[in-house]
Image (cartoon, rainbow, N blue to C red; front, side):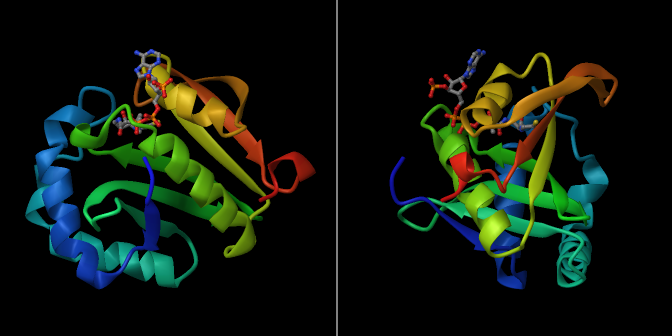
Length: 168
Ligand SMILES: CC(C)(COP(=O)(O)OP(=O)(O)OC[C@H]1O[C@@H](n2cnc3c(N)ncnc32)[C@H](O)[C@@H]1OP(=O)(O)O)[C@@H](O)C(=O)NCCC(=O)NCCS
């Protein structure tokens, strides 16, 4: 999909983000844990807390916008420590299978190195999520080891952001 862009999370993304999470809740829970009712009930407070974490440099949150400016995904880097962070993402059902996650992860890997000074990323996915595994492998993530993700068998991945091969 062309015309994709990432925006660093802001207070004024709240309304579109809540709509995105509501609209795709059932879709997401087919492959990842549900956020729970409290997430939706307390969304405004949680959004403010996320922005505070971001201001503290612990996390870097992003929304993915299509060419018309519609919010179709999120791409997050959490638990920043020693130049490394954990990547997490989700893409709207209506935008699925068009390369959005693959392209947005590529954008975020560049941003992670150039804007946030990170040198490596890690990610996990469950074995029963081949779409996510495809997205990671197409972006140069390599398998580290098998693990358990939310009680299900999974895989831990790593990507070096400093190697010449992956430099933008
Ligand atoms: C995983 C997710 C982010 C993928 O988003 P997306 O924008 O549809 O992904 P892309 O289109 O970039 O690429 C997915 C690739 O996996 C492939 N794929 C999808 N289902 C697959 C399957 N069952 N087996 C093998 N490959 C599969 C797609 O065909 C596509 O490859 P293609 O371009 O050759 O067709 C999205 O499905 C999602 O948000 N899921 C719920 C949340 C989630 O699982 N997040 C990741 C947690 S680790």
